[in-house]
Length: 241
Image (tube, rainbow, N blue to C red; front, side):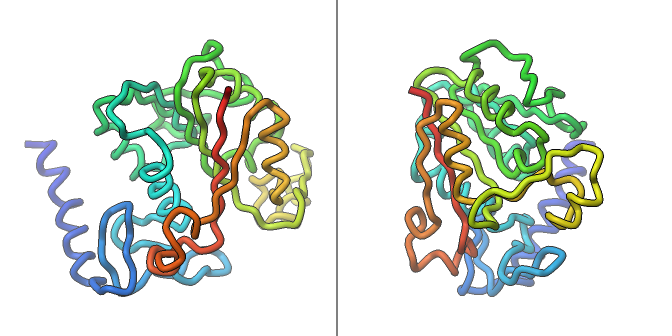
């Protein structure tokens, strides 16, 4: 009874939100809700960003469509998956996929199955078929080492999806752990060590990955960029050959 009573209010809350925000101009592929709008989100609010039903943001909706359309994640073949800094909505969905041997990992999140520092990954070489890592590396002091460790634990023939905010022409960073005030001045939050540019792809390839960059319009189609609220997003899809 405890499990049912805990689930029902969340389910009911979503039903109510779907009714309150129902419309045909927006669609969230994560929770499959038809909406009249996405809400603003952020310190300097981005318009059309936040799904009021499942709380997904632009990157979540884009990533979900990418995983469904451009990868073999849901083909029914057995795969071992590492999900770094797991998003709750994705975590719930991935746990329901019977073919996935699914592991979540984070250095701080108590909900994660494993507590790991990605720059010192405890798992053996070639442990995972799939890695999903979104908006993590900008918070890692030595991101190149983190990328290298993720490359190491990925199996040959496996693939990884990376998402990061690309906000500069080239990457700007301050790796000083002591100078939190300077990092806050540069990046808006002291928890960031850098803001990436398109040269993020070069960092991935330095570790050995074969990296492809996908724009939202290439995945969802130009007509759906606004409808799904995924404008200006990029995905870095990496293979280990």
